[in-house]
Amino acid sequence: MLVITACGTSTTDKVNTNEDPVMDTTASMPADDSNVEEMVVADDTDMIADDTEETNDGPLIIEVEAYQFDYYPNPITIPAGQKVTIMLSSRDSGHSLSIPELGINIEAYPDQPGEQTFTVDEPGTYAFRCMIYCGSGHKGMEGTLIVE
Ligand SMILES: [Cu+2]
Image 1 (cartoon, rainbow, N blue to C red):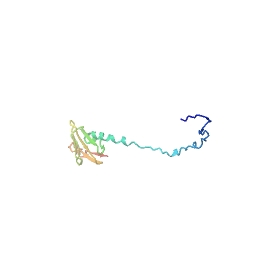
Image 2: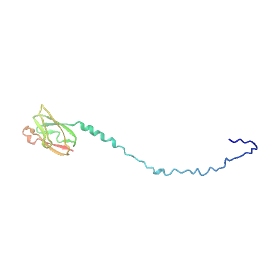
Image 3: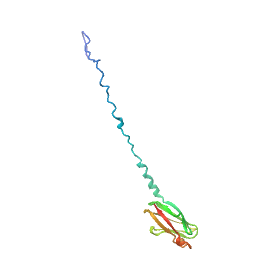
Image 4: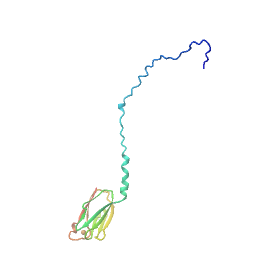
């Protein structure tokens, strides 16, 4: 602090009250907001993949009924790569549902249904047939397994 002793005419008035408060107001215009692109980030990828393991745990149960001289349903459609259990029942006599090339052979009798669990990885159409003699139409007792 200055101690002003004598003759104090107003000393320093260094306060420039007259500075033009100009030129600063030309503040920068907001530059091109229109260029800001909306980025839509596709973030869905995580929501898909988690269910597959659970559905592969338990086999898909497919009930098939054999009778003289056909099957129901026929054709039978199953998904490729999916573990499947065919549960075969018989309405009348002994029958089988057999696909030798896939190692499938399910036998069923009226008092004794049969089942087999398997997975077919290769999509395609497979013929199955009855391999237990069941009467006059036995030879033509055939069906179709569609794997897709
Ligand atoms: Cu038969």
